[in-house]
Length: 454
Ligand SMILES: Cc1ncc(COP(=O)(O)O)c(C=O)c1O
Image 1 (cartoon, rainbow, N blue to C red):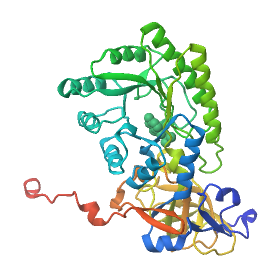
Image 2 (image 1 turned 45 degrees about the horizontal axis):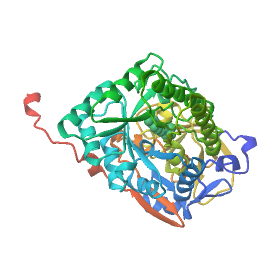
Image 3 (image 1 turned 60 degrees about the horizontal axis):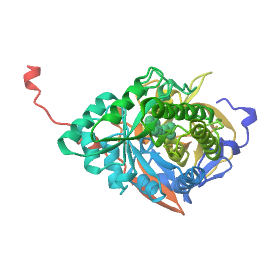
Image 4 (image 1 turned 90 degrees about the horizontal axis):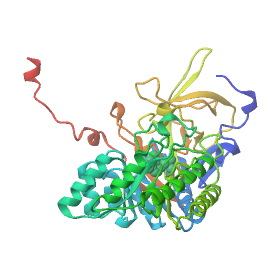
């Protein structure tokens, strides 16, 4: 096995790498020994692997940081990042509103006891059933994404007399330098009404005139994993200018502006702007826009998802096969993969790794960490430093896996989805129980093959 002399002596995680793990993580000689006061080995023994672990201190700390930095603005947790009942319970107890994008996310929010007024419903293709549910529940804001959706709302209004409070989703034409799959604020997008073509102004006029639809403001969302504030500042300028134009030219005065989420986090070596710096830059930009265009003071909302839950999450895997190719790479296979974390395979996303459990001193090697699925693209990390003697039965921890992992998980190869636990104060609470093979089979129906096999 190839030993890198510079990495010699201590195993995998450097202090810089350790900083990517949540605040409740404890290390000894580069090994992750505990999370939230619970030994990593005990978590694996009690709940099995793969295991999603959420650090309660990190999660609550991040929520509080957002609330403090954006004091006076509404902070809505974008539940698509991780939508499980217990997490929404914590978010709402800490004063967040909740953004949902489907009937399933809405039902989870209801189960978590989120007050309806604090719900924001998104989606570029909300069904009639989802909009009916929004009316039943009385969600605080529906963010209208298309004229088709406006028509659907009007049909519901005519039938049952419900009045919807809505924002209109606008694509402000701000391009971001993030992965194409997580860019949404540019003109060529399936989301929202394009500002530059006049489509957004037409939609505002239609919505403002629609019976039973109370148009309160505008929404935009630029993309995800955005590391700097400049794109938000540009969007705030464009959106306040557009609000002014709507008042001056179309006689429509709107008082709300939702600037979406997208605040980036550290996965390996990224240096995202701090939440306070984003907040400061955004406040200055919105205030400047309001002053310049003589707008009234606005009710402003931000919708962080990844930056609330991402850094709080760690996935624990058990190492299975270790395959060293003659004169080539070493493949370390773990007991999960693209079914519990699609991000590396989908976007080429990178993560930080550490061996977990009781430490063993020794040199390191560089390996490919791969999953157990039948795809060559099923990798979790490339060129990852791990202990030179890493072997079957060892635990491997992956940092910053709280967002868009469980949320995008699948049963590929009929793998049951992992459990998720919340750790803190030396205790572990189950957030989501592990799926069983019976769960996986539960919806399958036994058919009568004969008519087709004769
Ligand atoms: C409308 C909207 N708001 C908020 C978010 C959350 O983004 P992030 O998790 O990057 O903060 C998204 C993500 O796609 C979104 O579409």
